[in-house]
Image (cartoon, rainbow, N blue to C red):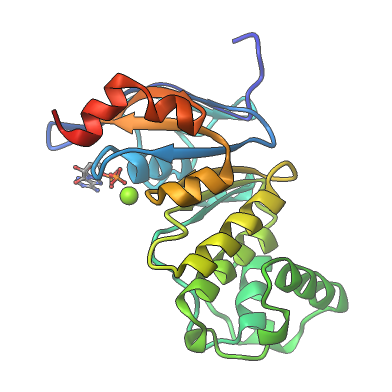
Length: 246
Ligand code: ADP
Ligand code: MG
């Protein structure tokens, strides 16, 4: 390949019990890009993120990040390369404070060792407050994460990815279950992170997709149906057919 993409997936296929959830998928992402993936339920959007992060292995095809093949790496190795993933349902540590949740992201720890909370270095404290400011939770640092509103939990999880120093952020349906106001704030947050980070957002809410204003890739039956601006893909006959189920 002549051009160096940040992420390049080629000819990727993944079957579950003979059903092709991902079918000969090609996907290329530039560094700093914000890209939105849309597509009907079951199109393979989340499975594609599973394949990038090593949660699932492809049957065929290659996925390269900065030229490094990911398909033989373990999940923690892919995580260490700077790829962070936010699942659809927020999974924050409810019994820990907002501050401690970001600390866990910073430590790259997905298991909670009480000892890390008692020896926070000044530079860690500074970085945590920087992240909390970015995600708009600076005044919530000492609250238990479990007491946050749904939208705030989603932002906290994005904050954990930032603390992890993830360069590529994979964000699965961040606006699901959010109020309109929370959705708009989430859009602003992602737009503020794009450029410095490369971001893939999976989303259903077209108001939100329009707010992001990014290139849109339409996934259907595990394959890229088309891509372009939201207006372009919405005017595409094939997309209209898929969504109207004709
Ligand atoms: P989307 O996120 O676009 O709604 P998914 O990627 O979650 O779709 O799912 C695509 C298809 O693959 C669905 O039919 C789903 O049931 C199937 N699938 C996804 N993961 C698994 C799995 N681990 N085992 C079996 N089937 C799966
Ligand atoms: Mg999904």
